[in-house]
Length: 413
Image (cartoon, rainbow, N blue to C red):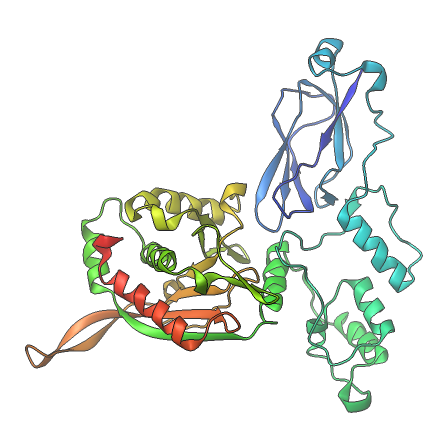
């Protein structure tokens, strides 16, 4: 009977692979079309692989903990002649289970190039679907940077191990002008074996990679104190009740709709303006941070954003964000005040120019000129971290003041 492959789907615009978490079916089990059969994890979320048709599972080629490239054959479903006809298949031309045919993935091409550079004899077969877990799905290509000099031999050794120059920050060099030699590097690796080592999660490695790439730009932060009493008063009467971060997100969206240049990206000698005001917000998940995205924030009233915002927060904490709610945002809002922090300098994502931070509210004395006395007021620090190549302090300050003014008039949000 014809056998239909179960394929690792494209799980996101820039996702190249995923790790098998659980397998929900057994060989011989009958499945229906679009049934969840394998749960996989990317650096962004946990998702399900579904069956292409009705039939019986006759082969599973994967195991939990393995990482496989997009397009890989994960298993096979045997279908009867009727189902094959419905699918428009010729039983004589159905793919055999032992000869899966597919093109090498970009990851495998990249791995082959690394192996050739490093001179490794055990390069993976170009048609092997099994890949080493790595970090993909980030919009800007990652390149090693930060070391003053690395020899070709050092570069090849680091490429072989999947390391970056930033990983050598703690290695003392014995070469000329303090350079790290290959001997220094090998001694450093040997010393690690005597220490407690735990594997970094894909989430932690993804965050580290994004922050390393973000730091290649000149970043700066400005901040002001913003009055929260109008916001808190509005929130008491609102139903449903927005969180402080959502107020800030909506205010940022309105401010950028008036002038989108601060959210533009510098590419060569041009500023690329955003096509839409889509803004992300940070959500702490297990061992990292995810950034769900709210679309068209400038044209969607605050009251309409509350339900979607709360739903995305819940999904992010489960690492089950849908594809439409990830990527493509022009800025991020982070509420570091939830940790009791009053001031911070968050780092914008590599593909973004701005990140707006909101600190914890504090009761402070505020001078009332009419009454000639101090009165208690609730204020919080607003910070704006930005790519200094695109934005200067004056423009950043004007944007931040506009956001504070919008927060002081929450009815307009």
